[in-house]
Length: 359
Length: 266
Ligand SMILES: Nc1ncnc2c1ncn2[C@@H]1O[C@H](COP(=O)(O)OP(=O)(O)O)[C@@H](O)[C@H]1O
Ligand SMILES: [Mg+2]
Image 1 (cartoon, helix red, strand yellow):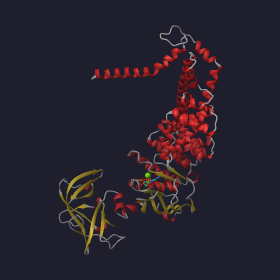
Image 2: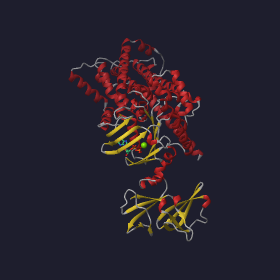
Image 3: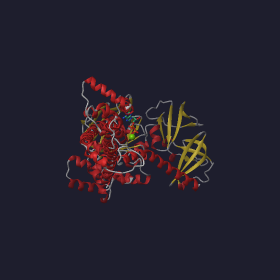
Image 4: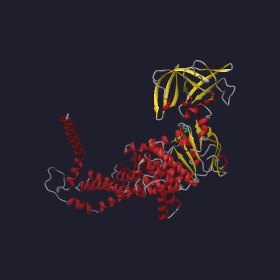
């Protein structure tokens, strides 16, 4: 979705803050969510993701700031009066109801008659790929993946404008998770609704989202498309969150930079947001690190010993000990380093492949 | 090895049988006493007869006493369950200032010696100028039974995932609809056990009734009075009937609960 900026914001947060006693779980968040986008909030456990979602869903009131929906302030509108629906981490399926009764619950509350309810439930079950024979099945007898689908169908039955998801796939095994991620993405496209999704796995966020917001300790530290986050993380935390990276700490020395706990002088671009800083972190992805042949040069070089190699499927990761640090190098299998074990190597990377972030 | 295991199993079986016998033998004695023809219980029993059972069921005095006991137990059950239900939510669910203190205070009456509790209530009633009757006994029973029922229901509340209520609310239900569609159906088994507890504890309670029922007699009160003066085999007969009735309520209640559960699961 490249035209996301042309879209109208559906939900807006202005200076939203949430404190529990004196502890700020969410700090001054400003954010626009656009109509129809798939927005993912990532961050480690305890960073305030759930609290933020609960405020958007109406289960928690902000301590400060405003939340608006279509431009109208909704701070005090309770959850049952908002056109939004949350799929809980626990899914919160009603254990005393069948699959069909769970899905029909919001319709029953709205006063829809039994025949219409059942027809709609069966429609929704087809959409989330549940066999119609599950209609009368006890939800507690469904598998993990089936329960996900029931929860999704129940949320869709409410017909919300915005759907929230709080780590719904965290307890699902890898293979099924991949399938469900894809289905969720398809469902987003088919329904055209706004999805706001929480996860602590950036990998999951990268696959599904139009935009990602990275949270840390209650703050939203970066918002951008998956490409933006990957290519230009704002700081060391985000870059490490994005995946396994080499983080090299440098101190300014005259015109150049000197490695901290690494021998040698280095060439590096100054960090964008603090060009005068005395120190910087340089982030180099393992795929941008390379082994240098004799006589081959790079902007920066290091000498070390390979002490481990891992297969990552089509790629191989080498762990190279440099002084007391470990550097990661990733090569495609066809470029594998022969007789790698305990081999003395020269590593190199170029300034344009490294991201300088403030210390 | 095998030999050892067998020996352990035999020992466990014998020991359990011994404990069960220890608990039920006195009850069996009472039952036997009620069907012996003689006025005084002596072993071995010379002749059996239902004479005292018939006399008991025919007695107008006893039917009044049973009515009193049933009335007290029924009223205690209704009030206790309502109070304990909301009390259990406050006990186990909501976090509020003073909850810890409330949890301790509500539990305390269970451990009061009941005669002391009864005496205290009697003194309070007379200080307030209230004439004691089955109604004051209802209140006395509740002081002791509400905490027990609160605990029984609270156990169920602890196992209840509050996000179920939030989910229902989020899906458009009002507070009342959340209560009737989600909270009550899920806590129902706890409420049902709580009601059985309330009924049976009230039905069998002696010390509180002795002090606070005034001129109204209940089954345990009558049994005691007749033991002290005017013993006849009607005492063990009524005792046996009261025990069997309690067992029937317990079994019937459990059975009904299981049937409802099964019907819902299907
Ligand atoms: N109801 C609450 N009372 C007190 N502290 C809370 C409450 N809810 C969340 N917190 C605290 O707020 C912080 C953020 O929690 P949460 O939003 O659940 O994080 P996340 O979902 O990112 O793991 C945590 O430190 C948590 O302990
Ligand atoms: Mg969370």
